[in-house]
Length: 335
Image 1 (cartoon, one colour):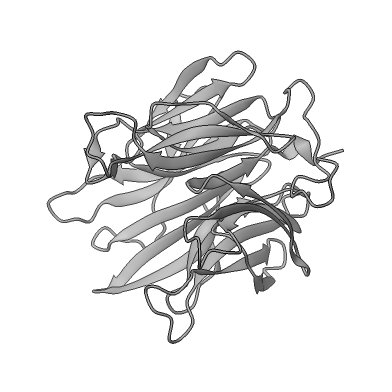
Image 2 (cartoon, one colour; image 1 turned 90 degrees about the vertical axis):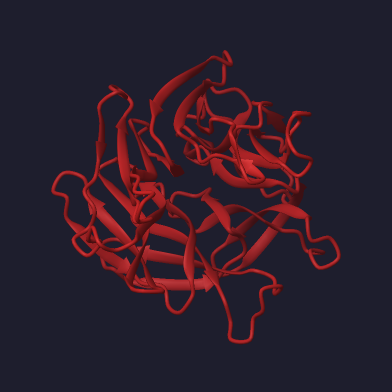
């Protein structure tokens, strides 16, 4: 952690939280002999301050995780384990792992979860998920559900935005709660006409239900990850970007989007990762999981990279090839 060449340089252990400062997910072949050889499962891992990962689950059914702001708990998504094709069914439960004791408790049962976020005050979770299933028409309703951790059985599902009408396909893909838990940023895709989907990034005020579009990706660009800077001033997103002439085999390109919440000012930088997490108060420094530098020779190679606005990637270490979805506790970079 004191090595300037380490992406964790400058971070510190959180008070009362031991050495764990983050969480991520690793995907790989399942261990069950009953599964097909190509079946894939996912497990939750912890990231420690010295960069050594620690496996938290081994059952192949945990597909995503975020760490609490104080670094003392991990909230993870659990699938039923039923295989659909070569991967597990979309998660239907949220669990809490106490990192001091290892105790696992069920927080909520919510079908079809695709993304999870925790507020900076640690009081709320937001889940992007299927809120109504319509297998007859395929027009499932996907939205955002808020979980108050003081009373997790009392969930609140936000109404769909006015332009996502019942006769249109729409899907919420990414979600991020503001540090104070009072607003939620989310990415939604709406099929405005047949075979034409428009993606947009929005903020919803949870008290007034006011919904505003803060960015609309151009062309085929779309949001692959979403965060709120710990100081609450900026919404951060990773954009999957395609250039003219890119083929299906072309390496993925990413851009880093910043939206100033007060002014609406948008800036886009050359990005580095599909999944990232802020490791500074203003979100100017990010930690992400990205293809390794030798990805052309080793397409499964992955690296944990730190990235500074205006400077790009400044440090990296190898990480498991199946790693994804990094989340770092905000206490590890606060004074």
